[in-house]
Length: 312
Ligand SMILES: Nc1ncnc2c1ncn2[C@@H]1O[C@H](COP(=O)(O)OP(=O)(O)OP(=O)(O)O)[C@@H](O)[C@H]1O
Image (cartoon, rainbow, N blue to C red; front, top):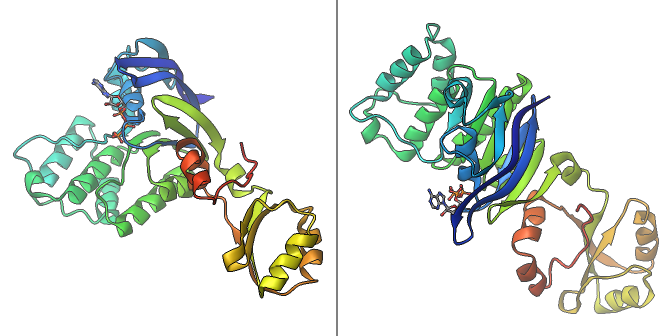
C-alpha cells in the first residue's frame, strides 16, 4: 500500500511558475528522492503534502488521509523538516526541544538524547546565536525525536558540513532499516544516490522522470575509455574495429565506446591486436541521468556525452 500519494496536483503561480500535474506514490518502507534545482517545485509539492497549501487541482494523501482536510493529523504524524527554518524567538535550543517534547507528550527522552549526540548538537545555546548548521541540527533532532513512521525532508543537509552530511546519510539508512517511509527532497546527487530506492526528477514544476535507483546502478550498458599506446595503434584500431565509435580523440589517441556484457569479449579480441596504454570504465551516475534532462544540449556541444546509456 502507498503511504504517500500525490495525484495530478497543480498549483499555478502564473508566469510558468508552480507545479503542474505532479503525480507520484511512495510505498511503505521506501526512500523516495525528489531531485531538482532551486525553483523546480520541490518545496511547493512538499508544502501541499504538509497541508500548508490547498491544491488548485488534484489530491494528496498520507496514510490514506487527505493532506488538506486532515492537515492537523498530518502535522502530528509526520516528521517534517522544512527547507527554510523558523524557530520561536528568545529560546535556547534545549528550551525548544523541551517545548516540542511537551507538545508531543514525550516523557522518555532517550531517543532525543541519541539524536543530539549523533548530530553533535550543543543545545544550550540561544537559537538566535546558533550557526545555520546548528539550527539545521536542532531542526533534525526535533523532526525525528517522536520517532515518526513517515519523514518528509526538504533539503535536509543544507548548511551541514561534509562530516554531518555523511552522518545524516547513515541516519537515513538506519531509519530505512526500521521500515520508515521517507520523502527526501534534494539537489545533492550523492545523498540521493546513497539513500533512495526511487528517484523523481522535477523540472519547471513537472515530474519529467521517475527511475529505480537499482536500474542506474546495474545498468548493463557500459561506457569505456581506451587510450592507445601510439598513434599507429589508435589508427589501426579505428580502421579495423566493428564497434561504432561515438567519441574519437585523435590528439590523445583515445576513443570512447559503449559495450554490453555480450560485446565485451569481442572488444578484448580486437584490442589483442594493438597496444593500449589504459582502458577505464566511465560510470554512468545519477548526475549523468539527471543532466540528460537539464543539460543535454550543453553536454553534446562539449563532445562528451553523445553516448547511448540506454537507461531511459
Ligand atoms: N507563494 C508563491 N507565490 C508565487 N510563486 C511561488 C510561490 N511559491 C513558490 N513560487 C514559485 O514556484 C516555483 C517553484 O518553487 P519551489 O520553492 O517549490 O522550488 P524548489 O524546487 O523547492 O526550489 P528551492 O530549492 O529553491 O526551494 C518557483 O518559480 C517559485 O518562485
